[in-house]
Amino acid sequence: MSDLYVLDTNILVSALLFANSAPRKAFELASSTGKILISQETIDELNRVLSRPKFERYISQAKRERFLLAFVQKSVLIEIQETIEECRDPKDNKFLELAVSGKATAIISGDKDLLVLHPFRDIPILTVSQFLDS
Image (cartoon, rainbow, N blue to C red):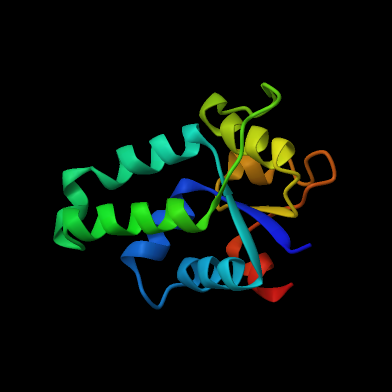
């Protein structure tokens, strides 16, 4: 069985916008060595963020939409089985729920509210650097 990863929204946005960035390398490594897990809630958040006009100067709306569509098609959609309310930022609980429901190998995030929980129910929460070095 391949590894199953949860990548937070900021990692995905950075991977799309910055071709030579560490988040892009982490995204490519996760994609090539395993599967990326998504939930309806994480897809909705990524769609909302990518729709922000401020990203137009980096990449067109059409390219952002194509990325989102391709990303969703290649990822594994998980139905959330458990509500989790353990993160100090309630908006980040969706990543914990996804990781637990999808039996993730790791969560990759730069968010301090998630990183402080490492490990969460035996699921490592890694920075991009830690993931790339592992």
